[in-house]
Length: 311
Image (cartoon, rainbow, N blue to C red):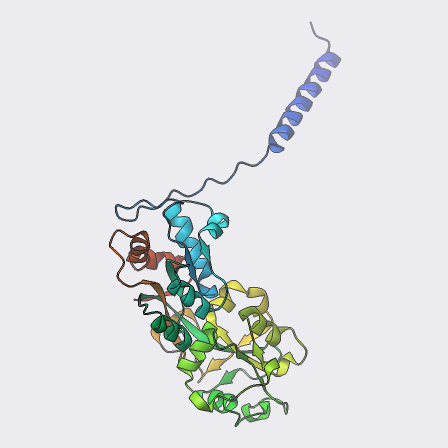
């Protein structure tokens, strides 16, 4: 018969072996995430070889990633092989004309983009698939919280130059603009519509990127006196660290939100689009993907990415 001490030693050894076994299991490498199954798009099967190379506006990049990942059944971190959402909105439209892209998810085309397409005898087909808004932003420490249509027009035409005229401190307003071929500037030109009354800013008040505009408002010296504009989705969904140091002004007392964009209550709302060359055959992969993006299934995908879909 086993002695009590021997029994105790055996029990301790068994416990130790169990602990070591569990530790060994916990140190096993994590299993790779299983890629999502591809979604059927009608009777068409997308593959890496037939997927139409896609581009578009930076603010549409999350939707582009979702589209590629969904129809190819791949992880989102592998979608960059099939799309490029970079550069200005105008350059993306020009790349569609030149054949570099087969499909765009893009914001409003600029006058220059339309002119270039016409010069190449190129026509595109576009369908509105979502809505976004142009928002006016200041540093979080700026006490001004609301701006009116008239005040925006007066600031950007050079008539209003001091924050005290908006109920703020006696400090000069620094009104930043975007580069002319950007999607944000195209929206400003369309929605604010100052035309020739838009003042010509100093070169250091024209910002060449979306992130650059957020930085001059939230981070740079004198940022408390800065005023700028960007698109709502980009700031609130893609640059939340900058959002923490930024205040989105209400316009005419209306707060910008997905609900006020959807209803049109917020005044500076505009659609964004899926775009392909006009006249593609029904079985062309770009046409098939375009039709799917514009379908209820595609709109639901946009809503899943927190875009405002077109009703």
